[in-house]
Structure formats: C-alpha cells, structure tokens
Amino acid sequence: MTVVVAHRGASKAERENTMDAFLVATELGADWIELDVRRTSDEVLVVHHDAHLHDGRALVDTLAADLPDHIPSLAEVLDRCSDVGVNIEIKNDPGDPDYDAEHQISAAVAGLCAAYRTPNDVMISSFNIDALSRIQAIDSTWPVALVVFDVLDPAQLLERSTARGHAAVNPYTAIADRRFVERAHEVGLAVNVWTVNEPDVVARLVELGVDGVITDDPAMARRVIDEAAVD
Image 1 (cartoon, helix red, strand yellow):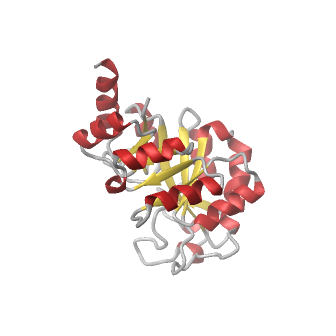
Image 2 (cartoon, helix red, strand yellow):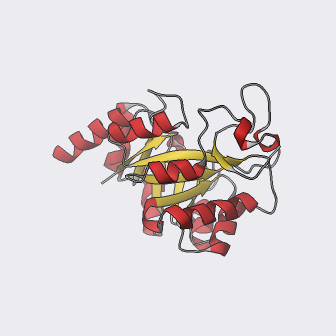
Image 3 (cartoon, helix red, strand yellow):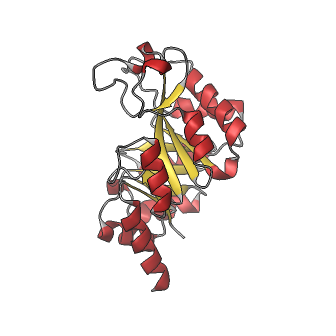
C-alpha cells in the first residue's frame, strides 16, 4: 500500500519542519515524516529547509543555542517521533554557504541514525548524489534515495540509481507517470513522489502503485489512500 509521508511534517496545519508539525502529522495519519537537515557553526544537525534564517543569518555561521526555539535538532526529532518513519533530506548544495565537498554532514547523519534508528524506519535522501554515496561508504545498510525535480532521460536516471545501490527515487510529481513508476519497480527502486497536495493526484499515484506520496496535507492523503483500499 502507498504510504503517507508528511512533507516537513503537517506543513499545511503547522509551521514546517517543527516538532509541532511532526507530532501533528502522526496524529493525522502519516506513516512517515520528511524533513530537511543542515548544520550549525558548532556542527549540530538541525531541521531547517533554507540555508539562511528569516533574519538573514546563515545557519552554518550560527550556534545551535542561538537559533529560534522552533528549530529542532535532528536528534530531538529522531527521538521524539519514534512511532513513524523518517525521511531525512540532506541539504548540501553547491552554491549554498554551508556546502561541504567532503560531505561531513552525511557522516553526521549516519551517526545519528545509528544511535536512534534502524534501516527499517529511515530513508536518507538528497538532490546531491555524492551526499548519498558518502552515507553508503559509511554504512551501506542505510537506504538512500535521489531526489529529482527534472530529468531529461528517466531510463538513465534509474540506471544510475540502481548502479549506485539506491533503495528508492523521489521524483517531482510531473515526472511520475506510469512508465516511470513501472521502470523504477522493474529495477527494484521504490518511488516516493513529491509534493502531492491534490486529492485527484494522490488517487492517480495510488492507482499507479507508487510507494509513497510526500504531502503537506497528510490528513487528505490518508483519507484518499484509505478510500482507495476499500474500493
């Protein structure tokens, strides 16, 4: 059955990437939560999408103790949200102020996952394929997924993900047509689609057999998926 993955938590109902958003997501029926992780100047992994805070400070130049109270650490989320799976998206993009070509953030994520979780309830994803390779070099048992927004050659993408030992691919909605999902499943890749906020799109993706829908509205997705199961 297709699982509900709450995009940055229940971000339609609560402030995204906060403990409130993650806890509410579980109450609304999410099977998994999805979050973004970056690092502070003192190398604490925190949950935040952008490289900068709203006041303009770069996270990588800011101490964890000086962050706004609503920004949780990754350790806190892994600890408190033990009833759901966690899709951790590593943010390490060239051009961002916190970019690290050595991918030390990946090593830190792997360490925290080992402390709090098992490979059954974690997925580590990123737009940066080298960030995923760093995870695999540390411990290949952690499942990883490449996040993709646009792709010119879906077959080549899936071939590359398979060759690198990825567990899944996380495509933008527009990419996930029937042929893409079929090809991915044929080579053993799960498909988790983002960001899906319309009931008819959720229903279409469920019919295609995707493995997860990543949504800002987990209550809606839960309802559509449960109705499809009854039908």
